[in-house]
Image 1 (tube, rainbow, N blue to C red):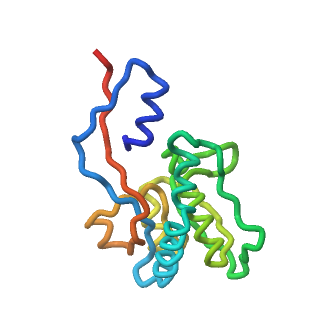
Image 2 (cartoon, rainbow, N blue to C red):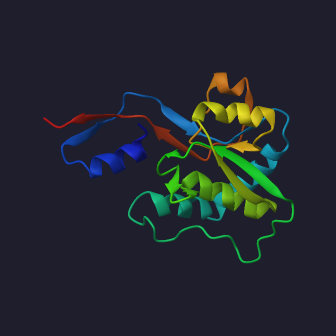
Length: 177
């Protein structure tokens, strides 16, 4: 379980605690079909979102003391004239991506929406099994895969990754003695 998700779980269960330091840190990035120039555009937009504080604001809306205080909203003048960009995800990894009613929300959904706003696309999110995301990107069914996706050498053989946008660490949850 990732540390952010684990912290939320443990906070709701007084008899549990987190054991950290067992696993290596993971870098999360977005994945693209090999040869897709969209990756470079995403990297540029991602760097701008980091620099102007939007990325930190999105994260703090889901993690920490400011949860729910400043949800991401598209700028009123956002241009979506380039068409629709499809994001493949697995909406089972709160707070990164999860379902709220019929909507898929979370950190990854908001970051992707902010990037699409910068690049001129409307965002469509397709929920699927995690193991199907890379195949969906490779086949062109999706333009980008965003799902708390850890960059690994095996995955790099099959897809291109964006610059990382955050890191996480897996932990183990145990009962308190």
